[in-house]
Length: 122
Image 1 (cartoon, helix red, strand yellow):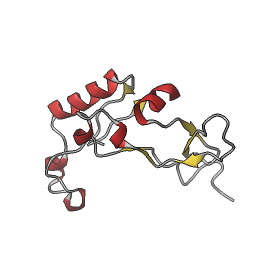
Image 2 (cartoon, one colour):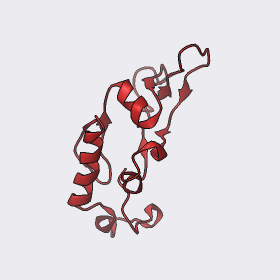
Image 3 (cartoon, one colour):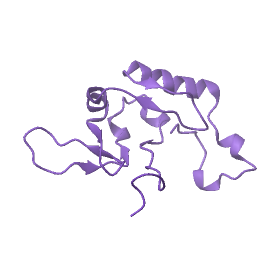
Image 4 (cartoon, helix red, strand yellow):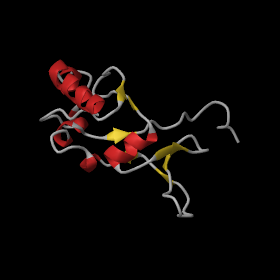
């Protein structure tokens, strides 16, 4: 999610949502920076955009290797030689991003799996 200076997400309403969105120049700057890091980026929607890359890019940029789990969530792939279970990931550490990009990014999160559909009904 793109960080918008001076915007507190807890005060955004349907009346002021327009002021809580990043301007096009800021959004393009953040997307361009992620592309330079090796990610493929989706279009900006609201204050967010999707990123996609090989696990090695995630490991290089964030220090984490994500992998899909059987529960539909993303998990941190255990390091070689460790027998620990894959730890669920809700987000990635933004403090690992380049210093110039950190203040522009509010968070890097994974979408929750749907609560409906095949495999969700006991």
